[in-house]
Image (cartoon, rainbow, N blue to C red; front, side):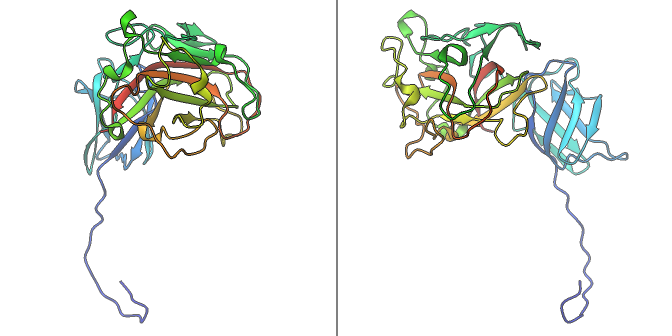
Length: 313
């Protein structure tokens, strides 16, 4: 080391490279044989010390497509199980923060497997399909939105084509959603789902709204909460900032912490955020409408599957 006066000090040191950081998988519900991309950092591969990826069930990845410091593309090996993914480099071993093929707290799979629900329950239960516009299902049915969106802010209001409602109705077999997971500490939970968007989406935000019994139930049906300026929600606007709108190459996992449910329908940050407790988070609505940004008129198809509440690890 040389200081500003030209004095030199010799000091022996070594660079300590961190172990891998394993942040996300582009499709957490990928099937065996699908190509996926794992992102993170320090995903370092050397000829003398190859990077190793192991799926749950102790199944090693053998078919690697490409490497970089922050991402690895590979083929999901046969026999992969649900659970955490492990990455080992020359500098250590790390476990994923996500849970591959996570079946914990699945609210809607559109098939009714286990405790997951097969449809909405409200004025718009959601349109489901197994295949549409070149999109094939991950397994069984999926929800889809399809229609025309105006590029102006708030011009489109199309509940029939771009929404689904779930309003609790326990006496008729439609439970309060908060009975399906522990909603006592929302800071430790995130909403996840898979999307597949084959046609350009370039207008309006996806408004994701957890409702409580004081907002709406099946017995007290209303859609006034959709435009409420005080009911917190998440706004997902993946097309904003892109040159040609948003599409996906197959199914992609979306993750939104419940702490991000704090916006009004126009994108303004509310003083009251989402809270848990009795009578809260009993219903759920997805509605593509309004948002903070003007877009471009478009006719997207937006497919959705495996809506779930995942613990933040």
